[in-house]
Length: 632
Ligand code: MG
Ligand code: MG
Image 1 (tube, rainbow, N blue to C red):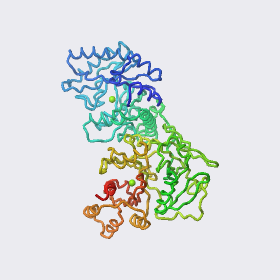
Image 2: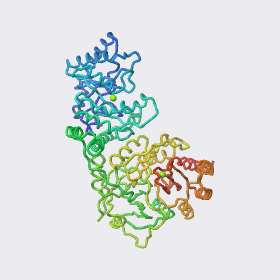
Image 3: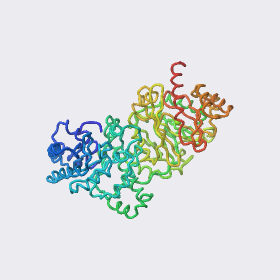
């Protein structure tokens, strides 16, 4: 976490953690004695549960052992002043460490004996890059051989899962000999394990490890102690620590609820039968309302000023939307086509959305059709999202809503109100307006996120909305890299794309900075039955599409056997193409951007294509950059 030791303690206390493990460096350079730090923490309602790390202890010469025991006594002094009962000893990483496990057990026994004199305990952890001991199974054998009641095991999901070690053996360890459990997730990276561990760990639910299986095994073993997060992450170091602490708490609550599910209803729980029942009886795992079902996007609300309302309205007209209604009391207009509802809000009271810093033109709220708005909101608040109550006009009906990360409001709209009853309440609908057109529904909403918010959003979407994360890709904008990740509900009725610019100079980065650093809707994918015909029709109506280089189509012809007539039409209509190994196809075209803020993408999915044509995005980004400098 960012900040000084006191900042960190205050942030986790605000997020309602019970305690903390202290990483020695946080204490060494902080101007307060260990006893004072203990008092600061106690005032915040926090207890110190672990002191770490004590390195390179076991498997040394007799002379080094004597010095190590003396070093340990000084750390025991600090721990007692802090009020900390447990010290973490991580496996030796020194080149000259002995391979003699009997010697390691004997030396750890000696350390545990010293700790016992002060009623302290020692937890032994296998580091993934330990010289001899790098797996929990080895560490457990040594702890058993040492056989001292003040010596136990520390388990860390990162060290086990990064080595692709099998966690199922954890269930056979005696639960009371596991003294502490540290959880971390991470993306799969091809990187040496030390750098991976020190820079890319993240919270459970943010990465790609099966942390749910790991913690399930821990509970099957009979563990009932603390659940801690040990994360080293470059982005977290610079992220506001209140947000990090909220993400941290959300990740643990989500982990608990997923473990509960796995042990009650899934194969692992069934395989362990009575042991799974005992595990669930020993600990009270968090049990939030189940995720609601989402049927797609009910509406997108755009915040604009008066002038923006006119130009955005004209833009929607050209896209074939009709003006379907006016709000009963505010300067708000509804545009419709197919199942797509766009609300243009030019109400001067809109800035009363105090949480919303971006005055537009931009999407300030998203409505989602759901089977159970109240459950959706209750799950969100149980998982640490803030409830949102927008300003209500006369006769308006409140809709359950929450604040998404980046301060966009998400409304949960009852599917029973679809398609018209929702809008009849607030709008005078134009009975002559026809919503017929070639655009069908919202396929995906793509967000541009500030640097450092990607993990926050992935966890939010998974935990709060019950979505599943897809592949994460790096795309080359002409001025920097963009990381893009798709995330969708299991039935794919609702899809988001999360884009974060790794550089400061890309168009995505500039758009996010215009918003004052909030997440912003970057584009909206709208489905059509036939993307080529759709692009031709839009262009005929005067909607400019992003032109795609002829070289792109030459390459397409070289790579894929597309028929010449189709290819020629795609080239003329600036339609891009992607095909997966199993035959799914994606045809899509991008509109020009509105006020440099957002654009639409028309998309046609065939044969269960499940991605977003991300590899074609550079064709758009390069073309836009080239247009911006007059074709050069
Ligand atoms: Mg650890
Ligand atoms: Mg897209």
